[in-house]
Length: 105
Image 1 (cartoon, rainbow, N blue to C red):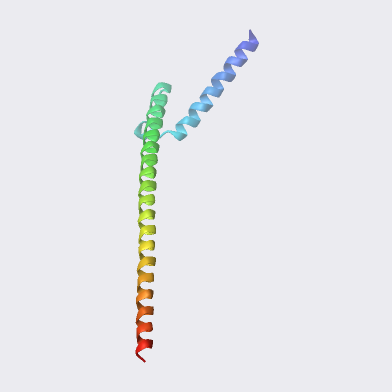
Image 2: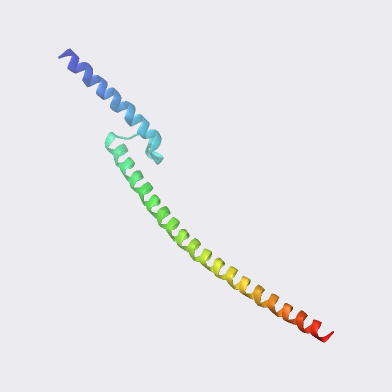
């Protein structure tokens, strides 16, 4: 029975330590001085939900930005191909001009 009491005290001490650590992690606002275990756990749950919502929004924004990046990358590649085509048209026109200029000389 004495052993059970020691284990029980150890569990309570461990619980108090965990609650103190939790207090350091959860924003308590004006109620930081006075709280019950229930209020601390409730605030922790709400804080976790808020963080999960923020994470969901951040992931959604990352997906949106990745889609936009892929779209812009495709546009850039398309413009690069058009530029190559325009450059090749320009160089063939200039070579045609130089051929005709050489023929006139």
